[in-house]
Image 1 (cartoon, rainbow, N blue to C red):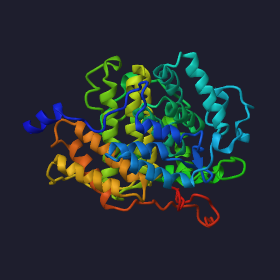
Image 2 (cartoon, helix red, strand yellow):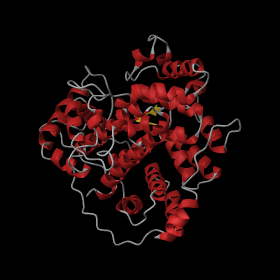
Image 3 (tube, one colour):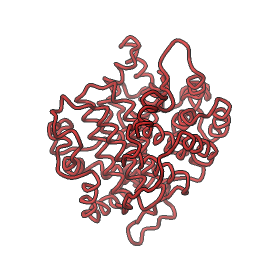
Image 4 (cartoon, rainbow, N blue to C red):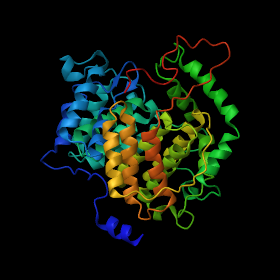
Length: 440
């Protein structure tokens, strides 16, 4: 183990983050050449563009500019034209709403939202960190909208170092926002007790599972209401059901408050290392994904990449806002677990050897060779980066990163089959499985 400690202390910890500078990297150039000026952030009615996160993940895995361009040439064929491509302002961009508050989560006027954030940035003298510090806390409770893609793409944009992409994806998070609804609490209530429960995260999930029948029925009922013309929202079953669970925020918070987070019991809230806490949250998302009985579970993939995305934002936030955001993320992990019908988890017994650098090179090459689905490369890149950050390569957390990579590469994506009310004809429903044939 001492050899690994010596190596890891000095070596490159994954793909280097790209710093803002006057000289753009090729990755920033390619992303900005394929921005929402050229392509709308959604397509086929409700599907989120994966362009930003997929391109950054390719670079993280060691893909070169030629491979990125090949991906872009293929992927952009399914996207819808954006502002510049149309040659005119789309009808939805007409500014009938005046403020960001008016447009929060309304899924209307994306380009109006984008312009308002550019105005905010200008008022802050172009300081993108100040803009994120000011804006993200308002949006963090709604991170689960559109299957977490607003948060995911924002995190990947921050990682890329492109201010343009950060503005665009901050706008998309605003556009798709679906907030957790607390009826008896405020967002900051009880922060001093956060992480000081008596259960492990997985034990708290098991406790939630005991009441899953009640919550599944709630999801079914609310999905049918949301699909009605009265709701006027076209989406997929997992997105409807996530939205349904977000409406019971007090219940979600009660489970989160039962969780004991290692290290938090001994310190006050203002002494918490929020970066380490965000990494711990990512470890829980990886554990859910890696140990799930349904190998390569589609929605749990998004829990992993969204938790990683939140880690990119943490250093920019004030401590209290960071703690609230992490607590929201834990609520969302509970939500996606119940929405996927509370699957069983395998016991973790790893006899695999510790990965070598050559093993990781082979893993990255396998991920780069998989051009059928952009999600696989993202999982591999996240787990690779997290593995390099963990000093004890024999630890459970490091071993779970290895297991998660094997799950991603060795199994087809698992699409959950959702249960609907008896006698309900699902043949005419859009997005019952949550996907379309050309989605990714």
